Amino acid sequence: MEISGRTGLLGLIGSPVGHSGSPAMYNYSFEILDLDYKYLAFDIPVEKTEDAVNAFRTFNMKGGNVTMPCKGEVAKYMDELSPASRIIGACNTIINKDGKLIGDITDGKGYVRNLKENGVDINGKKMTIMGAGGAATAIQVQAALDGAREISIFNKKDAFFEKAQKTVESIKKEVPDCVVNLFDIDDTEKLYAEIATSDILTNATLIGMKPHDNETNIKDTSVFRKDLVVTDVVYNPIKTKMILDAEEAGCKVIGGKGMLLYQGVEAFKLFMGCEMPVEKVKAKYY
Ligand code: NAD
Image (tube, rainbow, N blue to C red):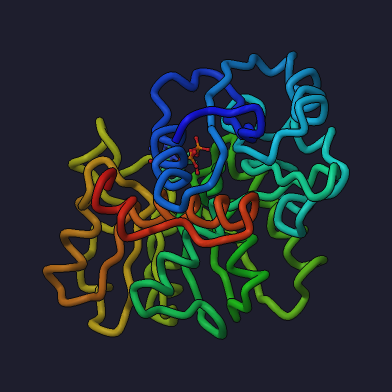
């Protein structure tokens, strides 16, 4: 589609952005849906986040995405935040609603949607989740907002443990119906006991991702019951050691690639107001 005087603009901000697949995926979607928009990536250091948000306003940009290191900073300059963004204090999506900039975060929405696409509904379920970083926090908050009955978080006693304590407090305050607890991941007895009463087990740590691809947080594979859904946010490799072990034990397994796709699909729906042509995008880029 040719660029005209009416072509609308969307964009990604953060640094680095050169490796991002978002421009290709979104521009391909605009072409398929015959939407007169273009999506570009802008390399923005964190100290220029406010300027970048002002540019969104000045150019009346339709929306866009935010990556590191701007995800937290950008939340300060939005006119409104989604419940998940408010709880987490970060945004990866900007939506321009009649000149009002709304910040949202779709990592958790992408995770939940990926489960749904694989026939798993989080509503009413108990989840054990390992990790307390960016991906883990987004999943924990979205799972609570989407009706998870109980969430048991396990993490190392590193800098992320304190972040997890804050997430637990926020979920307790914002979603009081959801039971949420935090444990030390090195307490394997407790980890296995929580998995035994869970419907879903999720890895959202760096374990399983290259160069940790021969590692897993679950050393005792007898915890993999057939009715346990085992999910990983790591998508490189496509199947982590944990996923391979769980698959061999007969569990339903869901890898991280779908979450990556669906966080983009959810963002597209938010800023464009329609569904991305998922199957075509999947066939071309995933
Ligand atoms: P992060 O740096 O914010 O968090 C890292 C997490 O790993 C923390 O919980 C930390 O305690 C834990 N960790 C680090 N070393 C560990 C070890 N030796 N043993 C146990 N735990 C350890 O990272 P992030 O942005 O949350 O990313 C985590 C993973 O999720 C990465 O593999 C990333 O590629 C993946 N990810 C996937 C998607 C997706 O769409 N599928 C989105 C975001 C991130």
